[in-house]
Amino acid sequence: MSDTRTPAPPAGRATSRAARPPQSSRRRRPGSRQPGATWRTRLTPWLFLVVPVGFLAVFTYVPIVTMIEYGFTDWDGVSPDRSWVGMRNYTEIFTRSELFQVFYVSIYYLAASVVQLVLALYFATVLSFNTRLRNLFKGILFFPYLVNGVAIGFVFLYFFQSGGTLDTVLSAFGVHGRHYWLGNPDLVNISLSGVSVWRYMGLNFVLFLGGIQSVPGELYEAASLDGANRWAQFRYIIAPSLRPLISLSVILAISGSLAVFEIPYIMTGGSGKSETFVIETIKMNFEFNKTGLASAMAVVLLGFVLLVTWVQRRLVPEERSEPA
Image (tube, rainbow, N blue to C red; front, side, top):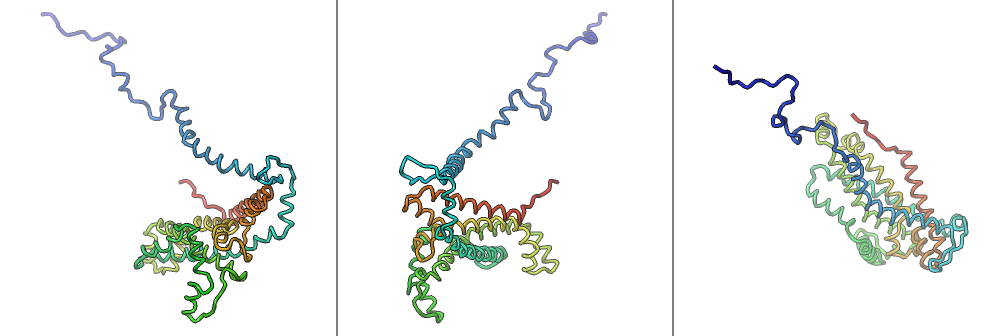
C-alpha cells in the first residue's frame, strides 16, 4: 500500500508565497516613521505660524521700527522730505518741562489702579463663596468693561457736571453746593481716575475670580476642618494661588496709567491740567505737525513701559513649576 502523505519541504527552503503574511499587515514598530514624514512633521507647525507672525510683524514690529526712525528726524508728517536731526527730539523732551511734566498726571491713575486692584480682589474673593445673588453681582461688576469708552465718557460728563447727578446724590447725604468736578484743576484728575476705576475693575475682577475658582475645593474643605476662617483661607490659599495673576495685573495697571488716553481725551480734551502724555503726543503730531517729535515721545513712553515691566519682573520673579 503506497504512502499518500505529502512529504515535508526540505530544511532551509522558503515557504510558499501564499503562506507568507501580506506586506501591508505587518505592524510597524513603535516610533518608526514613514519616509518623508520627518520634514513634513517639522514644517507643519511653522505653516500655522506664518499668518499670525506675518500680521504681528506688519502691524506691530514694522511700525515700531518706523516710529523709531521718525524720532530721529524733523518730519512734519506731510512733506516727502525728512532731515536727520539725531538726538535733538529726545533732548527737547527731557529739557522742556511742559512736555515731560504731564507724566505727573499718571500718578493719579496709578493710585486709582491700586484701588481698582484691591476692590477687584475683594469682590472676587467674596463672590467666589456661596453668596446670595452672586451671579447678578458678577454681571453688574463686569458690565462697565463691556461698554464703549466713548459712551462712558459722555455718560460721566452729565454725572460730573455742576449741579448734576453727583451733586444731587451728595446733597442727599448733607453735602450741599455746586462743585466743578471737571473744571477745577484740583478735582479733575481725581474725577477722571475714578471713572477709570469704575470701568476697568471688571476685567481684573474676572481674572481674579477665574483664578480663585481654579483652586481645588478640597483645599477649602481641609482648611475648614482645621478651623481656618475666611481671612486665613484668603491668606494661605487664595493669595498664593493668585500671585501670577496679581503680578500680571500690576504690570497692566502701571503701563495703563502711563498710557491713559481715552477717558480724559473724551471728557476734557486734556484741559484743566488733565492732559496726559499720550494726549500731548497726539496734539504734537496732528495739531503742531511735529511728527518727528511725537514719534520720539512715543518711543520714550514705550521705553518707560518696558522699564517698568523689567523692574517688576526682577522684583517679583515668575514662578516656574519643576517637572515631575
